[in-house]
Length: 126
Image (cartoon, rainbow, N blue to C red; front, side, top):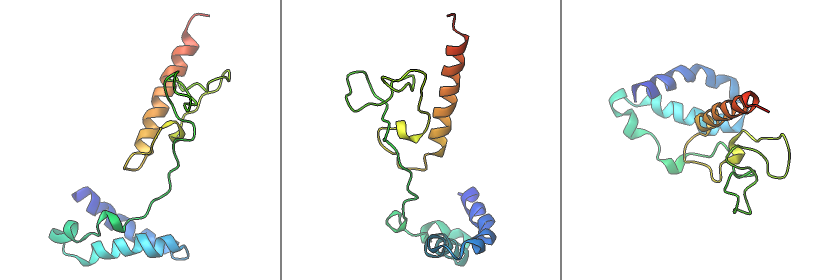
């Protein structure tokens, strides 16, 4: 939790550049101000509930990965687009549903796995 609180203190000076953007004013600045005004021991309990947060809009599921018998699946387990040669999808769109947290780490993992698969494919005997 200390790392989170340190992060809030780190971003507070950066908030000023986004004042012309309504999402910064209504969300980020409000949350940073809440954290700043509460004594450090009480910061966590004083943060707004999850109901007060907005989505950052991270679309997912538009190129769903799935089994061969899944009619809605666009890509296979090797991230290859079905019915198209030499095309893979490597982003959040392969996730059938979006997870509860930020998808960045999951997308990094997908990209690392895809890189490994592509390297193995390139090194395979013809």
